[in-house]
Amino acid sequence: MDQDSNPKRTGVTRRGLLAGSAATVALANAHALADPATPSPAPAPATVPVSLNVNGTKHSLKLDPRVTLLDALRERLGLTGTKKGCDHGQCGACTVHVNGTRINSCLSLAVMHEGDEITTIEGLGLPGNLHPMQAAFVKHDGFQCGYCTPGQICSSVAMLKEFDQGVPSNVTEDLENIVFSDEEVRERMSGNICRCAAYPNIVAAIREVHGGGVA
Image (cartoon, rainbow, N blue to C red; front, side, top):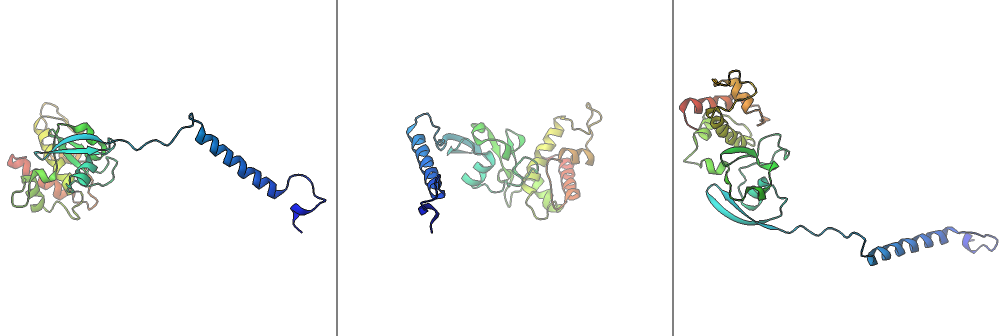
């Protein structure tokens, strides 16, 4: 016999309890919908117009203001030479130049760079007209899988300019006479990680470009 139909049983039944709970939830939901003070889901963020000057070409885009420079370059402009590695600013694969300074593009919002001069690996050189650093990486086999290579090259070019400008590193002993050395190169390039461990060849490529006086 169904417990709910037992005439000798009194009090709250399981069926009655479940029905009451469902009614309470329905009433609460109806109240939330009717109450204007109840928070509603946040609307999708609006896009904003952004003008990016990349490799000498101006691009007019409409972007979610949360889009990183890295994603704008890769997903909107098709410049996939800039790689997404860790996406946390720790591997250097996404290094590009902004107004001549190297940055991790995964840590910077695209909307922050309105009017800036942005240079990616595609803007340094092309097949048949390689940048000296690109040619040196090929000559010295400064890559294996190649995933980190665009960031390594962009960082290398900017690093040599920093050295020539007298910017010291953590291993610089004499601030008035900075001596170029493998130790200096390794320290200054420490933000670019190579999982294939081609570091000796990368240092050799940088040393050759520095010795040739071009960067």
